[in-house]
Length: 269
Image (cartoon, helix red, strand yellow):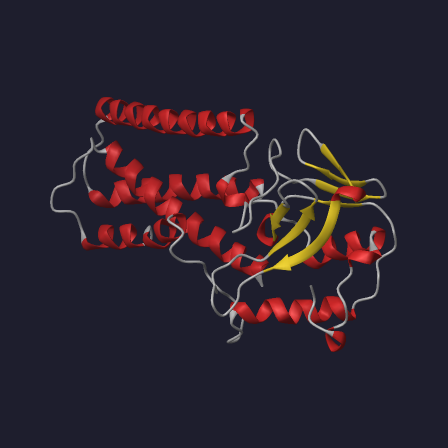
């Protein structure tokens, strides 16, 4: 379900990005000013709204749930894990979730250029190449400063060995350079992050599944490895290419003592 949610988010962000950059590029081509613009130009700006709402984290598309509330997923998944057979004790690598494919970025660039050309042609306004180049150069400078600022924040965070804010839940995540993914679960323990940090099985005291509850329905689904004497490792399900149950079952394969008790014998710890 979360995978389909991400696909819809990428689609809405792509449409919003094409509308924003395509319309903006058309306006720059005519010199940056439009007098008595047509009504359909306002509609193009309306397509930017979903992307803006998603980027401000005020809304997450929910698709294919058929009325299933988010807080129901946690007990259902726990029940399935309680009944699941053990995985073979083989190394498992938990990879980061991949973003949009390269062809998607190429399609967005082509769609942006096509929308800019179509908008400019239908505005019936002459192009002002010098003014357009001046505006485009200024826009690129603003974006460059913004991207450099974001890169600087990321480098400082890595230097201080602090996890990114969106990589944690209510529990503090272990301090790893670059975050806990990719993670390899093998006979030696957990090998997390890049550059990798080794965590032996003797340090792991529990593995648990976190998720939304009726009291906190917006809590993200995540896997938590509790460690002795240090902060736990917390990886959100949306950040993993594999489903969260794979991470838990791979851990149980090497540490069966961490397996939850069956639900008919008591609540999972």
